[in-house]
Image 1 (cartoon, rainbow, N blue to C red):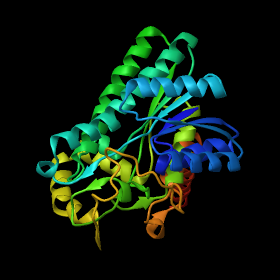
Image 2: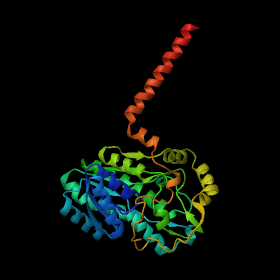
Image 3: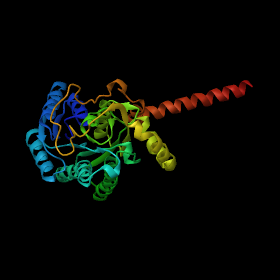
Image 4: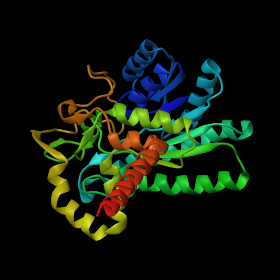
Length: 329
């Protein structure tokens, strides 16, 4: 498999999850220090890793990375588009070149990764492409317009891709995993123009929750996978009452995405250059104290047959109990 944005956060946690299953993992990111540390973690987990320093906004660089990974690890069976960057700010405070750069990395990086994967998978008539999405692919929030816009665009791109694969009768599969707020280093590394330290929208989950879901999605032909009850509530709530979600977010989400700590987000921002250093927590950000290590909803979603059987059993027991009470009466 190959994964972009592999040096930290979701990408790193996912690479290690694949490593635990003995996978050969191609790691793509810009920063050498984070890549090397991720490769060491994959190896320690039981996998084989090969690193490629590449900027996903550059199509030729992504193509060259894929060629190098296949030369060292063999044909790529799974390609995961995960790389992202953003600017935490009000739209009018984001310079055009900053907005363009965040869009090129997060959206076009996914498009380029998909095209490079298709170049290999379509002739072989096999393979899986996983798009790492977000609840924000359905519901935009304040201070994250570049990220929300890119994730909405990825969702539209993904729908076109699925139609084309179906038209061709291809056995190449593509899926999208929609995630909640996660404790990743992006809240330290992304450019911020807000006065206080950015934070994920609570409740917050550890990146391993996402990693388990992405690994599962890569091996099961599910069209789309929601992870976490907040993701479900956000997506369904926005479909049912978008005006209510908009008013709620307008009132709560600006302060709700900032801690009480002051923050100079311009000093180590990764928008144009990588923050080329690894830190002690690896895939994790600074919110481990409030991050959930698991999601019951994600488990239920991955085990729908068990969930359905359990629900049927409960319904049957309730029906039998009701019948017994009526006979007793």
